[in-house]
Image (cartoon, rainbow, N blue to C red; front, side):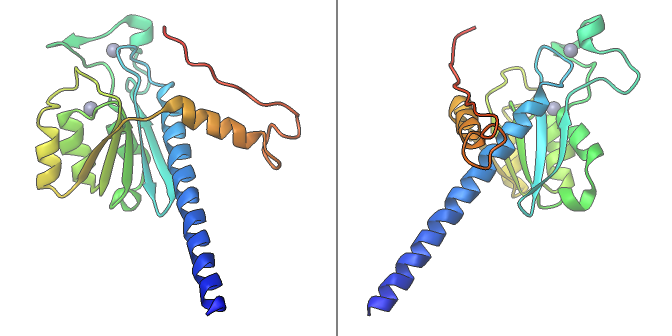
Length: 196
Ligand SMILES: [Zn+2]
Ligand SMILES: [Zn+2]
């Protein structure tokens, strides 16, 4: 009886560890997606999408001009009907940067709200299984329709309210624990959230 109990508690512990590991992976993947968005070249919104397959990040795409064409940062926006049309959206770049096999049944994370063309022509079309997006972008084209579109296509679309400070603090703390890159250098980083 005692043995059974300890086995049960072992199982419970390993399930707990697995859950913590899954959560850490999710947070690190969000952080990496956010970091890539910094490379976006339209300052109306710098975005990025990433794709996860079999617990690995298999691709990223941030928004930017076509290769060899000028960026919004350099020559200003190309406004048509209230939208900047100079950049190719992150979701399209994700599809271009990633193999079709990796994209099929992938889990996609998006910084800001996917627009209707990206939802329809990229995420649903390349076969994303789940789409998580953080933050709301009010100017996303056709954002009212994306939920219905996802539902009809059996794609799980979930808005995530992400606490970036807590995610990055956790990552920085881990880097200062034994084995972490900051540990041997003997420092830790403390984040402070301030209004801009
Ligand atoms: Zn722009
Ligand atoms: Zn888009």
